Image (cartoon, rainbow, N blue to C red):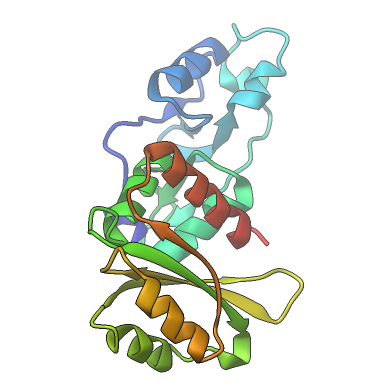
Length: 220
């Protein structure tokens, strides 16, 4: 999935001649903490709510308020994983997207990205999540899948996180069964460390927490 396929249709860029007051108003209107700034159609940087609130007056134009703005962006052909890393690295609520000629194409919204991730990991599907922990060298997806399938279940999604300052990984399995007792017992018989299991019926704020955890790990 490419960056240019997940552009927001709702969040517009600011112009360099817009005032700080307008920038803050738009951030409140679109529920974001960042907005891109264009000058003569070119992307000049990303302004943040915190930078605006540090100003003594918001009446001047953005050009006057800021001589330099940070310029994080992703190219239009960047993969979804690269997009996630940009969000994590810069702690963004929107990510500008440019083509290879550095022409501004639009932004990706973190909130819309959460919804996309939820849809693509089968958030609406009936099932549960099983969390395993193991040494990196012990990870074998074929064996993990065999254990799950031996209990008449299927893996819908796999997400792997490296555990900081260790040689271990956390393997998160989304499985198409809600009762994981038999699967857990089988993993334990094969000496897998089962760390947790979760029902997939999560509220939106729980999904936000999972996304924040993902961003934290990607930023390490």
